[in-house]
Image 1: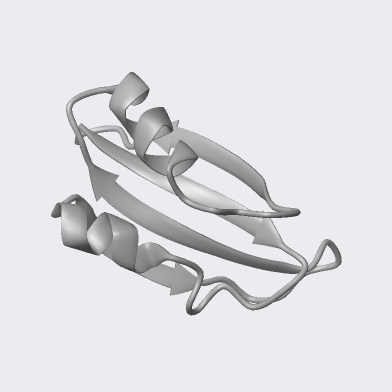
Image 2: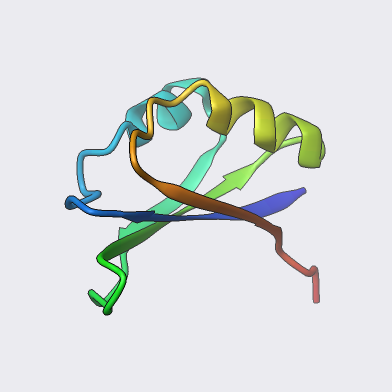
Length: 76
């Protein structure tokens, strides 16, 4: 299953530990979003078994002062 992990942070996300997901072999894509009023945002697209695995993998990443949202990607 594919999940989008959206991260809002007060600092740039380009080097924000996406390597943890890449080394685990679950990272499909990553990028920064256009800065908004709430700070810098970025995303990771990951491929894992289920929502619980997505949550567990994101919990392993040090994301201080960040807001994280995990959403399943619909298959079309």
